[in-house]
Image 1 (cartoon, one colour):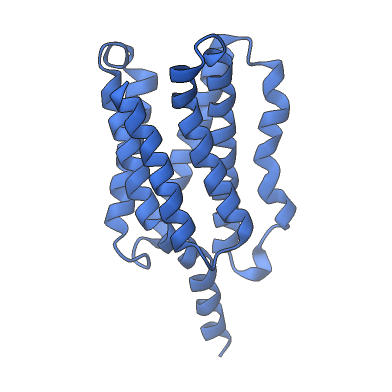
Image 2 (cartoon, rainbow, N blue to C red):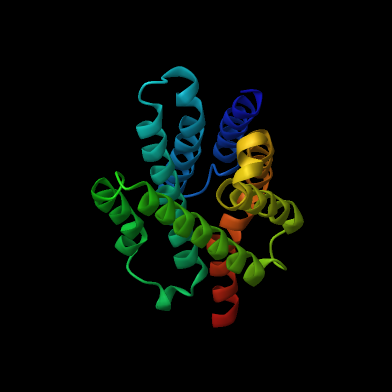
Length: 207
């Protein structure tokens, strides 16, 4: 229970940090980041409060959290591209199709788990690729990388090491919460480089 509370606190501390540091960022990125953090905290916090519906609520909060995360990544990928090669802004929100399809598959536990494994693993892979492409430009990228590494460890333990997850669930929760905190401290630099930093490079190229 303490580890779950730690994750919840980590989510809201990261939320405050993100809102303070992203004061000049687009409103939609603030909303998406806030929604991802809040739904992540709900997926662990609701079972502590509402035991009867915790299973269904946890599944929905989990899928909403990954949907918001994939949308954020879609936004960053678009911003990272030169202006003339960017896809239409409406495509940023394609991950929300997951929410429309999810009601038809959430009753099948195996399919539900496979979907979460693929989506969460895909999100981590995309983040790693983005970091590799901009690690030299982002200041103190090692902090962000450490956060992603902790998130990856949490992902592996939760989905692929069932014995460790069952007997020592606090391990993946502590990794998850710590990863969220580290990412929260450095995500503003990543977003800045993906947007303003790239635009500045383009303007230099034009000159």
